[in-house]
Length: 256
Image (tube, rainbow, N blue to C red; front, side):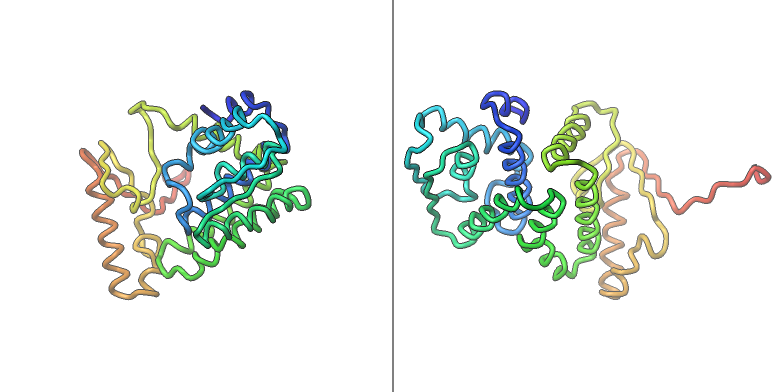
């Protein structure tokens, strides 16, 4: 069941939708550090987590009923039921990392009504420890991931609410997740490991970009060897043809 179907089924208000979207964003970022839920369930959170949690409301007739969620994990279903209007819920879990997640979520839920969705997204990224984790990461991918987070916040700023931003992302993902072979997939060399394609395009093969100068400066010969291994991965992904590109300069009219 997709997001729109869940919203319609339970007649969720705009505030409830925003709170759930905020919760999913927090869960997504924290899950990369603390492994709160199965990683494969994040992309289908509205079905696997939100809908599953809200189904319990069909058996809890009174909104003031006392509810105990034992082994609450990432707060499911207790947090979702709380957003839905059940106020008397006790969440119990033995793991400190999960209890801290719930504690922080309560603070962020309150912040949603006090600060902008952009500031909230930045606060979640900072307080979840995700930004600090990347700053301490010495791998060559870490700086790029930090830049991606900045672009994420900039993208959120283009929408008037967190809910609208996530709806846009869902539409984009739905448009690209088809089974047709007539598609172009864009991915990093790391994520391409183990995959094969008829034709592979490898842009940016020039000194400083690939091999990455930062990797060489920070790790010396080991960094260069890692770049060579990545180059081998890229080339061998092609079943028929691999095409590499450098920075191209288009000819002027006189040169044509």
